[in-house]
Length: 266
Image (tube, rainbow, N blue to C red; front, top):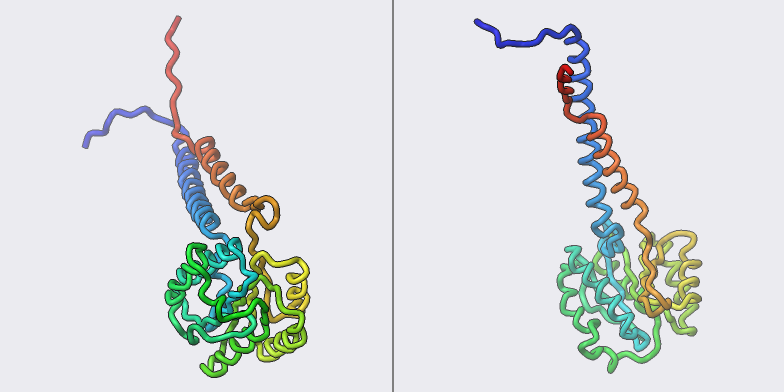
């Protein structure tokens, strides 16, 4: 068999070793780039989703404040939060409350049953509960009913999500404190979503849950704080910078081998 014309090279072993190192380095860079791009995707898509308020592995009951103090700005935040619960495709219960509370959806209802309630927080339609509920707010009544619903449904691992401006009636403080103690005793976690709450009301619940049993997250509109505030996505920027750096290193260190042209004799 005839061989193709070739140019003899004395360091073929060294080139073979470098070739294997280059192939391994390319595979390593490719894995890092794929991982970095996947991380960018995850960080850029709902880095803290609202449906994370629905405790994983539990049957949640949503206690929703529909009192007079829920203004237009607060209504839009409620609409957005409920929409995220609809999209979560979980099974939930629903309590509507102001000075009294009633069961709107039983425990175990598909979360898309929340969809019809969204229109009442869009601002286009009047709140249908204002004729039933007074201007007062008793959060303890909502939490007590949610607890009762979980007991009656014999749910072993239940949780409660309270959505409210946290403006509770002063006459309710004693009952509310008792209710929160009961939740801690029965190991029922409470996720409190404060909708533009007063700082003092927010602090009250943070102190009440300081020893465990729940968490408080506040949602605020731009008008409630003067200007909108956005957290700088430092992690996302850092990952993007890492991807760009890896691409640059790949081109610099592992570029195609080129041969210099032979200089023409003068």
